[in-house]
Length: 396
Image (cartoon, rainbow, N blue to C red; front, side):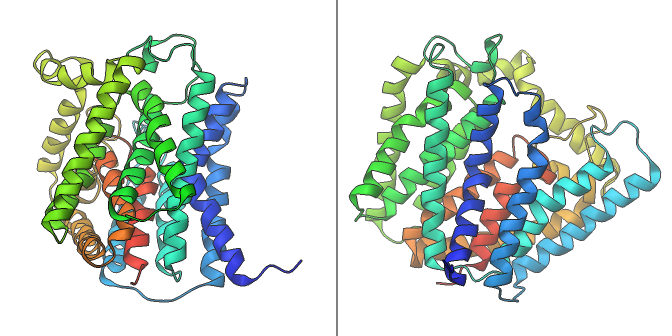
């Protein structure tokens, strides 16, 4: 049977969206809990190449060549980042937490190529709606997998990392993927007042079941990521009614989480409440603050173009994309990346004002940006790059 070009593009984009935002993590959880935890480390690059190939297919079949300001600024920043990788490679730094080739391969496959392919593909309303279904269903499958594999500890532990002999890939992954599912569900419900029965089932099931990995992961950063889209929508929505609806939905979500904590444990709330105490006591939970501080001191000593791919004091990435940009590309790269973000934010505001039904896309971008401010390196910001690319390439 002959498959039309349009259908092949839809299949390619849908499959890529699924694996980028949730599907690949579902596979990792299955591998970790079926005796193939070591094999899971070999899974990352092949699945990433598969995702890039899917975006490439979409580009070839549905391409448009248009470089707007946001795309140009991001490409300039990418060139600066590659230059830093090259300089580091030439100087040879044996203390990097990974090789320069790893930086190059990860940034190219996780970030730059998907960004280029998406921004040069004709993105339609159908593709944006496809994003809602793939992210929601993917996060829902992850929640079901969490319930199945970790059912014996749900409600009995404050955080899954505190349990020995549990095959989990990362508490942060559980928490952020779950928060993404919750965020997409509530933002879709907020701005799409008429939903089909299938859509309603997906929304409410996702909201409820994703609370399980959300509480097990117990990440404070994911809570901030979940709240940021509410604030953004309140600031830029057109009417008082829309602002009131956003506040009401946020309160409803908080109440739902309080009720869920009775069954899923209070670890998340305890971590939030204990944040101030952790900072004052200099506990390991607050070490990010020192990583950021030492990173900014390192930048201060090398402000123009930075001096390293990492925080050299800790020998690791600084757990904040803006600090890392300052370290690796200095004020020059920071200004380029800021100009790129400005264009994305400008188009995000236009989506809220003129196409509010796609606010869930803005939610994905805001949550990805928030995530990048607390964990991960520049080379792993695929959520941020892909959601920003979709916003920049979409035309109402």
